[in-house]
Length: 310
Length: 246
Image (tube, rainbow over all chains, first blue to last red; front, side, top):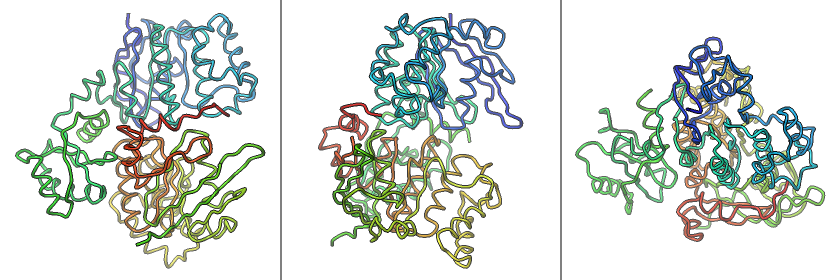
C-alpha cells in the first residue's frame, strides 16, 4: 500500500491560491522530498497531510485512510515536525518528551531505541528548558518528540532551514537511519543540494509541482548540454557571457547564463561551439577562461523549469 | 598598491560572563571586497557582526570600522548599511515611504532622497511597485528592495545577514548580481549565508568555529588547502564544533 496519495489537491486562503492541483504518491518506506522556495505551498501541503487543515479541493490518503474523515486514526501513525519550533519552551527537554509520550499513551523507555541515535546528542542537557537550547538542539528535540510514538510516517516541514551545513549533514544522516527502520519520511527543504539525499523529489513553486522523479532522473531531464564557464573576474564574466549569448539566445530553447558560485552555467545556441565562447571571452579581455561540460544539478533543472513556466 | 582597509580587527575578544563568544579574532576587510562570514550556529558570527555594526562593544581588542573605533558606535552606525532576513522594511508603509524613511534615518535630506528614490523606482525590478505596501510584495522583491534600501545612503560597508534565506533560485541569483554591482561601486559587502555554494561568490571567506577564525582566504585557495571539491565539503570538515554547547 502507498504511504501517501494526493489527488488534485487545491487550497485557497481567500483569493490566494496556495496549492493548485497537486497530485503525487509516496511509497511505503520512501524518503520523499519537496524542494522549493518560501511561498511555494510546502507548509500548506504538509498541514493537509498532517490532518491539520482540510483542503479546498481534492483529497489525500495516508496508508489508504482519508486525511479528513479518518484523521483520528491517522494522528496515531503520523509524526509531524512543523517549520516553526512548537515545543513547550518552559518545559525541560525531558519534560517535553514525557509530555508527548503520555499524550500518545506510551513512554520514553518503550521507544528509546528508536530515538536513541537522535536523543543521545541532547540527553546530557535533558534538564535544560527547551527555550534555552541552540537551533540544532531544538531541531533534534523536535524530531525526538515527533518519533516518540513510533509513527509509520514522518512529516517534516523544513527541518533544516536556518541550520548550518554541519548540522544539516548530521540531520540527513539521522533521517537515513530512520528510513532504514522502515519509517516513511516526507520532508521539505529550500536547499536544492539536499534533494540528492531523497529517494524521490517533487520540485514545487507557486503552488504547483514542476516535476517529480528520482534526483538522478531529474538531473538528466535537463533538455540541453550544460557548460560551466570559469574566470577569476566572476562579475565581468557573467556580464560578458550575457551580452554575447543573450542576443543569440532569443530563440526558445536557449537559456540565460546564470551564476553558480565559482562558475557561470550556460547553454549554447545551436551551432556555437564551446571553444568559440573562450575565444569571444578572450576578445573581451577575459583571457584564460575555461569551459567544461557538466551534469546539471537540481538547481539547474529548477531554474530551467521556472523559466519555462513563467 | 596597498589595498585600503575598511574593517580592521585585532585580537577582538567578547565575553558574556565566563563564556567567550569571540576569542581573539584578527582580520581585515578591504574596500569594495565581498567578504563571506561563515560558521556553524553558535560559532560567534552574530556576536562579531553586532560589534562591527556598533550594536555591542568588544570586551577587549582593537576594532575599527570605516575608520571609526568600535567604542564610538553611533559614528559607525552612520557609515554602514544593514539588512537581515528577519527584519527589513515596514509592512504597512509603501515602497516609496520606506525608502524615504530610511533615507531620513541615515541623515539624508529630502533634496537628496527624492531624485535617488526616482532612480531606484525606475529600475526594472521595482518599477511597478512605488506605491505598493511592502506587506503585499512577493518575498523575492521584498528582499531585493531591502538590500537596495540598505545601500541607499551610500554606506562604506553593508552587512547582509542571511539575505537569501528561503528565496527562489532566480531571485537568489538576482540578489548576488546586486551584490556584485554594489561591490563594483566600491561599497564593501560583508555577508553571512547558510548556502555553501554562495560562499563561492565571495572574494574571500572566513570560517568561524567555537569563537575562533579557523580559515580565511579566497574560496579557491581554501578548497585547495583543505583538498575539497567544494566549500560545503571543507566546511563540514573544519566547522564542526568539538563539543556541543547551548
